[in-house]
Amino acid sequence: MTKRRHRRGAASLDLVAGNGLITRRALLGGGVTFVGALGTAGTTTGAGAEPLADAPWSLAVGGITPPVQTASPFEKDVTRTLSNPRGEFRTSHARTPHQLLGGTVTPNGLHFSINHGGVPDIDPAEHKLVLHGMVRRPLEFTLESLSRHPLVTRMAFIECAGNSAPMFAKEPVQATVQMLHGLISNAEWTGVPLSALLDEAGIDPTAKWLVAEGADAQFLDRSVPVKKAYDDALIAVYQNGEHLMPGNGYPMRLLLPGYQGNMNVKYVRRIKVINQPAYSYFETKNYSQILPGGKTWRFHFVMEVKSFITYPSFGLNLKAPGLYAISGVAYSGTGRIAKVMVSADGGNSWGEAALQGPIHDKAFTRFVMPWRWDGQPAILQSRAYDDGGNAQPLRAEFVAMRGEATRPVTTPLAFPNQHYNSITSWAVDSKGDIKHVYV
Amino acid sequence: MSMSRILAAAVLVFAFAARAATQDLGLGKPLSESDIKQWDITILPDGTNLPPGSGTAAEGAKIYSVKCSACHGDAGKGGVAPYYPALVGGQPLTNGIDTVKTIANYYAYATTIFDYTRRAMPYNMPRSLSNDEVYSLTAYILALNKLIGETDVMDAKTLPQVNMPNRDNFIMPYPDHL
Image (cartoon, rainbow over all chains, first blue to last red; front, side, top):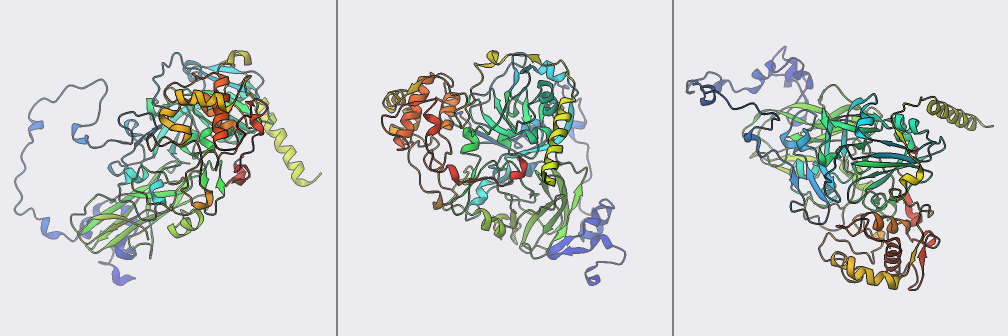
């Protein structure tokens, strides 16, 4: 409606949905158009501001340039959260602080990591990968012989099937993006197509399954369809340009883009081609799901289309009304993100967010939505759609299909179920504080 | 021949041709299956690759008290710490989606118990159990859950035949991914 237009010719200020969502077209011309949109003319005169002075760090020679650089000391709070900091005899989780990151690439030191038997200390010169079973001739590879293959590079997210599990709770767990959604990360992976190795070994064309096994203290193993191996599986040896992090599978891991994290077997030491799934412990128990009514899903594999807003989000306080850029990540285990819709009024109306390209297959796409907060309560949501026509389910739809936990969920570290991909809602109150809510 | 069968045959031929056409890169070092034997610990539900050896619940009880009970509690009751699972019991899955998954209410195959115990337990000493010990512990756990009799012998022949109550309760959400 033109009556909502602030001034003639400023189409970029058009509201596209309720509660202050501004058309993504406002982003196309850069930030200039926002200056007028802010309506804070009183502060642009500079009256009363202190004169600019040179800062002390500009007036002395700086520090030594180190061989490996690490983040500024001022970034000390940008860390993973640990579920098992003392290394007790149980699984350890380290969650990615998405609310403190931008773009789409998770820095290697902050990539999420789950270890069911600790992080093994592997000498890459001694590590071997063996391919055997239903093949013409079993083969052994080393990091050196793998690296002589033509390597390929791609972006891919890896998401634990238990990511966002606290959202199966009946009442919304009050926790940061990191605690709710920190068991997913996105990186550029470089490695050898698994299909090339299977061809090299001469796979039996009737084989339907592989079992991949790690060199960790659980010899963690998962059954993988041969179909996926020939689709887009890699034996990855580089992560964002450097060899893998120890917690992400050093020196080599299976990468199954879009498939549940646990199947992307780290420290992979053996791949056996078999004629039936192995029903390993992890695919039998942890990574299969009970459905309402008591039936159970297994071999779920795919992490379905999903998104969540990282800014603004729980724990942040909006200091003043005015313009904000709502931002978050969207991804789908079956393809590329086609569209992300954002709502500021709890789903009553939606506007299409701008997507920051390039948009990769089975990888993070960042979305941005300009929003003018008027200081009144608002509920921010995002909903992703992929190029296969899949839509991120609304919570009511999701709960009807997958159910809710029957017992209270008292900690975000709990895993009441797996494969949550519904919508996250952040409620902003009139003081600018943000809570996690269900709508 | 139906169209779908012709299509299926064509796909198979194509897949085979595509795979067979790839040249030998000469980068992998050939091995024999006997070289891999020590590593090949995968047990399949039909019993494929189960090793020689055997055990009973009575033998398993003795091993359990020494090597397992510190974490899993007396008689598999769990609870030494909240994160160490009980190995016995289990509520019906109709109780809710967050019902604790146990051997009795959930596992589809008894071979999974053998496989996981042998590859990963005890937690701090994986691969330290003999095959007889693993058969015995498996028998003990199955007997505690009344899935086998107290005196049943578990070995490569009997273990795959154990009837697991939840076996036929699983469905695959995306069968087209196979």
